[in-house]
Length: 394
Ligand SMILES: Cc1ncc(COP(=O)(O)O)c(C=O)c1O
Image 1 (spheres, rainbow, N blue to C red):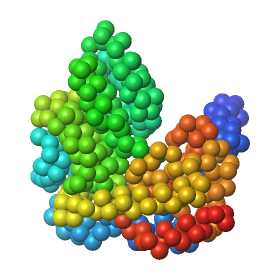
Image 2: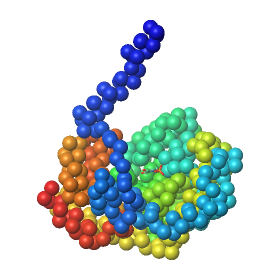
Image 3: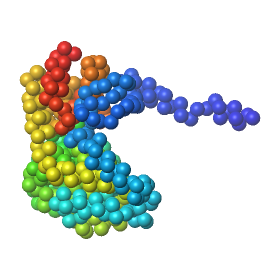
Image 4: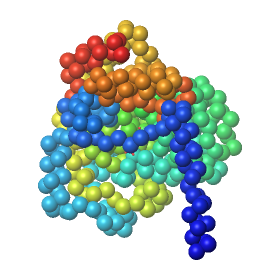
């Protein structure tokens, strides 16, 4: 009886309320929203309200495409839904291998491996390539999944200033004592919308005997004449040791991947814990991704057209005096600075019928809060014009 009373008085999770209050006081508390519609036609529904959607990574508008949906319906009828086991046990079926082969061919690579998510791919690959006694050079604006992979690896982490190849060169020149060296970067940076300086990174990796790993999460399907990514854009695909990505953005599907040499994939199958110890993705979902790859293969200029549209949009925002930073892509930040003004602007846009996510720390450094506009293939010129006309009055 007495023990029960003590247990009731002491709330071991009380500290959480303090933490949440603190986040609230600096306008950094997140709340969970409910999307009430699929992403269709550049629109989305929240709280019963239809909004123009500038907040999804469904850059080519494929997430509700009938070919992807039909692939799921048809295949689930044959193979069921869950994969039932991790890939090394019995989870990797014929549809997984079909997607691996299609992906390797699409990405111009020897071999491919599927991961549950892009997050899991980064964590699994980085921890397989580097460990105690090794050193990783990581761009300061890399995605959280790269950062977490670096931290888990137990390697020494050297963070270089964003896209600053001179800083990287100077750090790497002092790394002779380490066993292996890994340079890792987002190919297209997810918040700033700029791209990595791959030609220089390839040179630095080669002259320092370092491995080069890039994350094409946001660029696959958008950059390059065939939508293969930033490496294709620079004609450097054969120079990249390891490419990670996800099907969850421009391909409108789900799951992460890595492409590279056969020996890389063989090693990952023996070492990547997020691959080995996680259930394979549903078999049918592989065929939705295959359908997305086929669409991109059949209409390779979708990404180029989107980038052209983004160029015009960005120019107009600049002319209007907005700070769009260093963006060169479909990801266009409007950099505001403090959390409060960023949240106020987001609310005003919501009231005017536009969904534009507010990005605050820790996703961006303190003082660099922004509205992150993701332009997609479904946004009409009319939608863009109306948005630009609405902006100054907010
Ligand atoms: C650069 C980058 N890499 C990896 C990921 C993770 O991909 P996924 O959503 O498939 O876990 C993201 C997702 O936001 C990302 O922006």
